[in-house]
Amino acid sequence: MSPLSGSHSAWWYGRAIRLYFVFSLVISLFWIAKICFIDSSHLTSSHSIADTSADLTPPDADRQLRADRGGANANALSLQLSGPAPEYTLAFTDHIYCINELSKLGRKGRMSELFNYMHLSAEMFTRKNSAHIDTWRDMINSGYDRALIVEDDVDFELDAVSVISRALHALNSTSTDWDILYIGHCSMEEDEGRANSAYGRLYKSTHPFCTSGYILSRNGAKRLFAYFAEHHQQARALDVQLVALIKRKLLKSFSIFPPVVFQRRDLYPSDDGLELKIAKTFKNSAWDDALTFVPRLANWVDPLDSVYLNPAFKHIPSWMEDGNAIN
Image 1 (cartoon, rainbow, N blue to C red):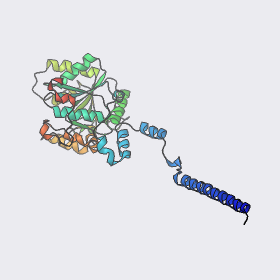
Image 2: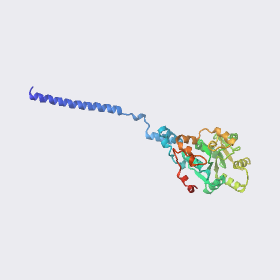
Image 3: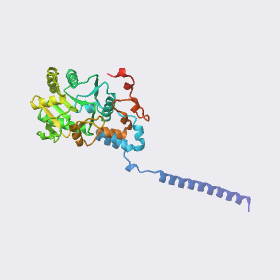
């Protein structure tokens, strides 16, 4: 074989090798693209996720988000709660008071967490000897047209804000001079009054014993404050006196039934049979729902003592570390 034919064969051989590597590279890239290619049409875009979340009302939006992230991340999320939303509160009331005694720090902590979970902006009305009349005075002086007043041992139904808003809308459309709307009580007979045709859970009050939760109009606050400032020495319980005023038609009162605010006697025991009976109508607890995602909330006890805190969390808010900071 001549030298010329040998070099010619080597040239073809080298060319064939190069073509082989190019072909192999093309085939490899093809399969890599085929394996890695993802049809994103079945995925939810960030825009649609935002739209879905916007359609949910707190705390439903938070619950959906946490559920989507799965149980593995629940413990990490349990160490924080999003803050309250003032505009959400203002949708149905000018202000929220939670009556709390200075000695009951456990209740203050639990209610603060519960309001945060429900995205409600509330004032912990903490005093050495708190009384309902003090909130009425503050409401009048602050110029609020209406205020929600709850005690520090209560729980809410998850859809409480929706129910309250609908009841107020129906109430304002038929009676502009109402004084008080009971959203929490311990009467099983509040549905015996004439129902408001615009909303089936709104009734004229019959005898709504207990003062676990109610909304006052400005006129109602003035009327109650004037009456109790003059009759403050009466020995009867506040809720009994309020029912007496309703019976005498001195107070224009309405009630939501079943109520959306309940006293938690499993957390704070009592022998009051009326409260235990009404509690049977309680269906969807906001506090129990919060515990599902925020297990450290179970640390709140009454009275609060560091020996009761779960050492796995040991979470004490800064306002509790210095007793002088509490107002």
